Image (tube, rainbow, N blue to C red; front, side, top):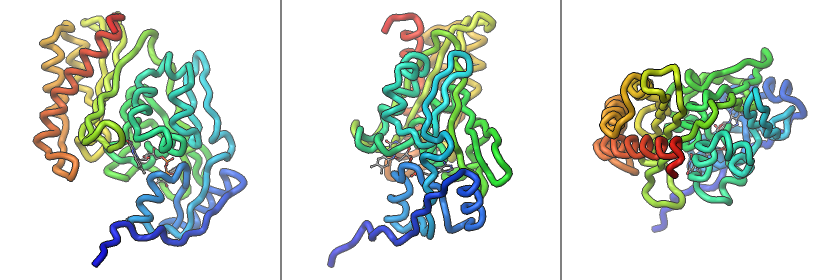
Length: 300
Ligand SMILES: Cc1cc2nc3c(=O)[nH]c(=O)nc-3n(C[C@H](O)[C@H](O)[C@H](O)COP(=O)(O)OP(=O)(O)OC[C@H]3O[C@@H](n4cnc5c(N)ncnc54)[C@H](O)[C@@H]3O)c2cc1C
């Protein structure tokens, strides 16, 4: 007997609207049976494996700026929804001003996958394991969303509601992610622990971002976000508060890592146990903070 672990991709209609208005109207009129399509790297796997049964895939690439990638010295970075990860991570301004986003993109699967996969797709898919979400959150990302009533902004800090769940409603199309320009000299790292080093979702992911902050007691500002250890991608404000108020020492990083461990709420799954995840959050947060400090001080 053969077991077909991957049934065929079911039939669907490919819809290519001419405008965002048309796309939002179609998605709203067909709520529950239509979804926006970017690279399709999540969609086609979920449909092939029988989890999603959409009748219509609505291609929202190439609509009114969704293909733009643009850096403005004061406004910051705008990444159109249709821009793939390879394009983002090779942009010079991304490497210079948003190095943690470039590093997070690099951690995603393979070059081939990244020619299709988009950052906006990673965000809208809302997997707690999404590798680029932590960087977008720590860079204060805001999604530009087009719905049936026109445009609005959705800050990432309040965007995620649960695994695969966001504040988006039928008819909503994220057209771009906007990241303000970070403080001068800010840097950090993304550490991804997977079952292998080349192509796997994370067991634990730790994003750290730091900058000098003369207004804080410590003289620094550190932020940490965690992947795969809670129902949503998780920023840990307690780490920021603690490291703003206390001297930056190796012991302070150990305490900050303990606070990150305390904040997370992982589950057991095929990639790792909750207990292992908790232990690794502590280890990897400490490591990410040490790397971030080294980079801030120009030691790396
Ligand atoms: C082999 C393989 C390896 C992978 N490895 C990784 C990995 O290492 N790390 C990782 O994070 N992910 C990984 N993924 C998952 C996937 O590649 C990413 O989540 C990717 O960023 C999704 O982008 P996409 O453009 O392909 O999105 P799509 O598949 O097109 O869409 C994803 C979801 O977002 C919704 N959506 C798309 N566009 C919009 C929009 N404009 N507005 C509102 N909703 C929208 C879709 O309806 C769908 O629900 C992997 C996938 C595969 C197949």
